[in-house]
Length: 270
Image (cartoon, rainbow, N blue to C red; front, top):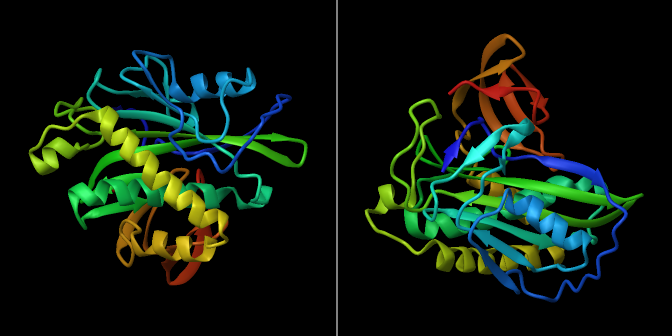
């Protein structure tokens, strides 16, 4: 999996006229569709929802994608058949529109739960929703949120995780895969199904009203928490200590005085 952007993560707000029959009791991962190749699993899932051919719980796994989406329109590339390329359809209608980051927290924790079960405690969540092991990127999340007026219709959570790939382009930021970490070969489809179980558990927990607890866990596993890190805002670089992330998805930094930044306002230099 090759990341051509600093973050494969975002919350996009879109309007849609489609109506989605939702049954939030359906487990995430049912049905599970394995695809040989698609342009993008998120695009594929959205098309299925808008055709009323997918609802809450539907999962789409691809062995390859040729137009993978990254942050700000950048591309995302994965070695054919080596990694998890997965999109799931979610019904977040119990959340308010201003709680979009809650879905990001839920998905990040599920990915963390899954990956740390294999890679151990050095797994971290890099704000806003990247997966890191030590200082190496191992995965990321892209969320497409769809609204009709003031109603949250549905979301598609796209997840990419490095599993068996061992060769990465030198022009991409340092990456790592589960195989490199553990020395073992894995079956990406089976791992994707396992990941769906983690997603379903975390989603049920969020739906039960445990947002504050999930945010606390997210901050517990926050990459570089308590450390002084280099950031850049526009063309100005600065150093600040990573404190935490709030419910709005703002990262709280301390450099003499505490400040907060929305995603897109600053970039990590390290």
